[in-house]
Picture 1 (cartoon, rainbow, N blue to C red):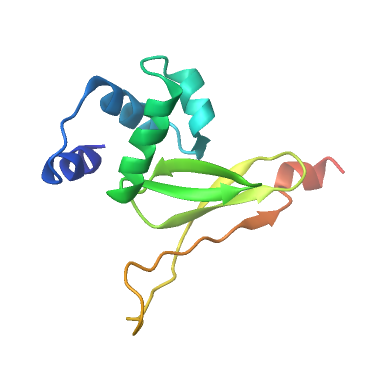
Picture 2: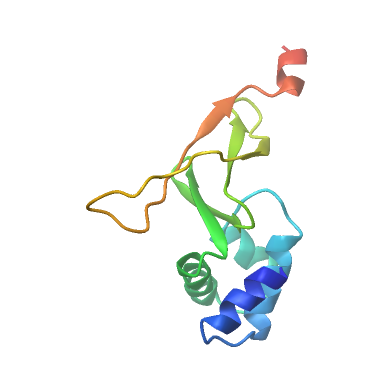
Length: 127
């Protein structure tokens, strides 16, 4: 979480109570969370503020955003990673990203999204 707070301060932003609360909650949960879930769990500020804060965190590279089943999910972006989702029970597990990008002639700030799905070991065992 200290890297995230450093990014905020270096970009000229203050560590407000709501920002700190959101960072603290994200750092204690390894599965990605929706803005709606974060709003429900952290009752410090209104839902619009949650979205604005998450957008700021995304711009600064503090959070990683994934679209899973048409919903944006957020988690701290300490290292590049993705999540694999069980198609049967919804269990999610983090997997490191090993993609590297070359310099593209006509593009800057290239990012990617990858959705991995499968069937977790628990669901395979309980056929």
